[in-house]
Image 1 (cartoon, rainbow, N blue to C red):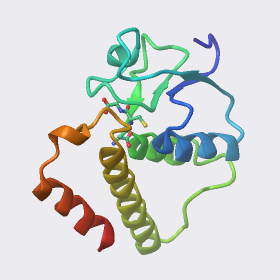
Image 2: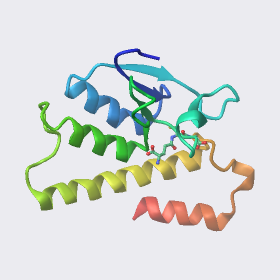
Image 3: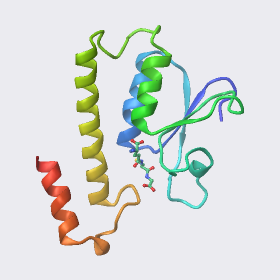
Length: 143
Ligand SMILES: N[C@@H](CCC(=O)N[C@@H](CS)C(=O)NCC(=O)O)C(=O)O
């Protein structure tokens, strides 16, 4: 783990972490990427996030500053905490910002649904899915 820079616990294909990685790059914030498989027995993920999911942002002074988790909250953290670093990554208008957050929430929900469908975030395996569950996800994604 980086001694003097941020660490992002991620998985190579994680669509959730991508938004946060792009934000850090855009703002020129140096960070170390630590790839993990969150359902492997050796993962450190539970040490930092009680939900046992990634991405997780860890600080160099980890004893003083608690890790930040959930991609939406990490994004909020980057945008707010590093507001003085260009680019702003958010508009200056309250209503537009709220609209952008709504679109972000929808996009994240769609990601969650597609991960559940493929079982790619440790979600339900094909055998344990009911038709009702599948129909609900499909309806929601089509809507
Ligand atoms: N709401 C979370 C979802 C993150 C998520 O599902 N990440 C996957 C990896 S891409 C994960 O850690 N899955 C582990 C699990 O579901 O047990 C976020 O946006 O950060």
